[in-house]
Image 1 (spheres, protein in one colour):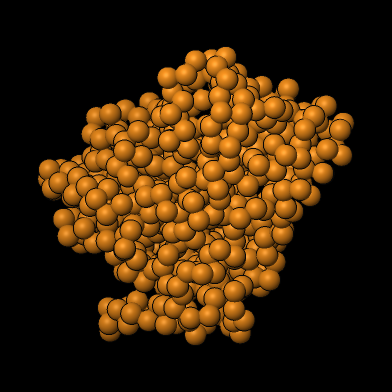
Image 2: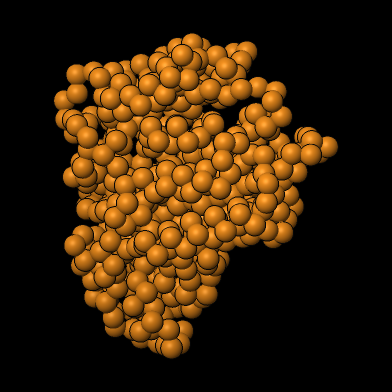
Length: 510
Ligand SMILES: [Zn+2]
């Protein structure tokens, strides 16, 4: 019987958010160890309130395919909503716990580690690589397979430390479990000596491109099809493209392609190269330019029939909580209060201070307060409002929640991350999207799937915030970066970024 440990430490960080992610954010969202983790990944739900089955359930399915050969050893699973970089203390605690659990686990023959790939820590440049180093220091040279979100960033050190790296192949993401299963199969095969995974990767000096980067739409559809076709090639174990989280503070940030084969360097190289060329060829297709709030409100007002048959969805593209923004922006809310009279609007804002000040008040109470603009005061201002307290709730993930009625707007104030992505964010607190004219979400893509029954028109709105694409251009890069700068070709920087990997391979093969 071979023993394989498994763990997750997952969060997507936005380096521009001044709100640090703390241990409380993990422990109040998803934090499981040992037997509880084993139960969650076999019986479910894996991440209660978020995902029924994700990478670790997929991994356990791969283990279940080899019941007489493999025993899974659950360590820990920690997941937090996207947000600012982790505090140093939070990171150090998670790392120390993981290392202690690995030591306590005794002799293991391999490990699966689910990471996001775009996690940041205050004052650190590549914290996930630090986690891999810590893991390696305990497990030694046994196979270590990791998985990343499609928005992860691949660095040379990660490629050196991992046996194989596998990424999501859907955007919006819906293949978490499938990816975990693929990682599990590669790992189990390596542990049992059935195959010998080798990797080839390419790193592009590019942080945005491919239009909306949706897997089933042009221009990225071709890249996703190519990955699927590659994986049907004999000897190819995985083919991934990583499109990075542009607000990740790592100078070596850039799209990359990564192919895992069974001992076949030449095929891995060839496919990684072809995928990189495909990605580079769509670099000029940028995300669409979004209208400002006034333009969007005018468009919503004109969409009378659509509002009658459902609602108009407004995505607050400058304050996307699922991409790490603080969720306290008041720009769009202010515009909706001032310019959307006559339309029933549902909107959300995160403000722990307002929650604390209002929590003792009762439904029906008249309220005069200011909301929002406190977590990231550099990007928006507190908004004074007068209205009525409608209801109070305590909710997993969102924390204490208060609904305020201010004229035609129902404002949902949350203590925790206002991760507005699913209808349940509103329906659970008595706000029925069928009744609304405009429903605001703080999400880029997944809401399009979840709100499908209600949504009659989608408007992405740009104000000013931590998830503006060009806001990422102020971060530090190791050279010119597309699309901020004119970049002639990708191969020089790719060679620089990969240099040491190449040397190590040459040394190994010599
Ligand atoms: Zn992602």
